[in-house]
Length: 327
Image (tube, rainbow, N blue to C red):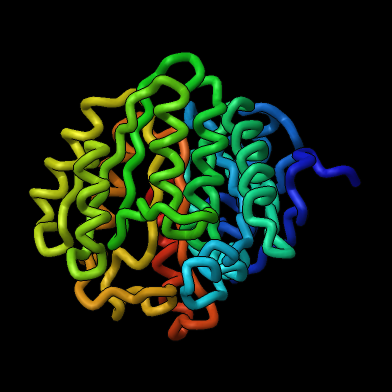
């Protein structure tokens, strides 16, 4: 069967999970998610949800199976296996969403060709966005972010003049200047692309670890007008106010979560575990805040490395955050 999105390399695979019954009261994620069929938002949504869904537009999940950016950044590889691990962790969760959810399959980076993979993932994202979906990419190293951006920047919303904001929950700025794109370069790439398009670069980061970002990176952030909060300053009220102020200045939001923003005890399965990190309740509160803002256009979750995880702990956190964002 032909794939509905030509850019996708791996079609949606069967989901699995605990079975308690077929009715809505017992439904779990594995029963609720349907393979994306190429339709626009609203097509068949009521049937997929058994009458639920309300006015919420359907969500579309896309895997970005890549750790090439991490390899180039001299990190610990393994994030290419993350999309499958996140789906596995999502499958057994009780399904409380008031929206349909579609799985569009995976874009797979192979042969070291990161740039081609990012371009193809971007084409898949824009197709899903313009079909009326809330899109969620399951990375992948944080090179996932530039793949996401390519789709978001090409979407009807941004091309139509809406002010795009990029909110990154991360211990790192990822503003490195390198000869080749890596997991450490995506936001500098975005800054250059936004400038070329004649748009302001609106980028904010929650959770920056000062010891893990050089002075040069702080200088680059200041030169680009990046707003940020250090991990040590991430008390709940301060983060809430910071995010609210950022949301006030934009029309649509791209949220990206690098799981290394969390303490190592909460998220051990990442390339660069955090010695300090931002508490999970604070990160979860940001997810609720942006979901309720009505401005969330696209999101991704990056840097899960299943080979380094402990008892699937990091994958479960990623699944829980995604469940929160799609509520």
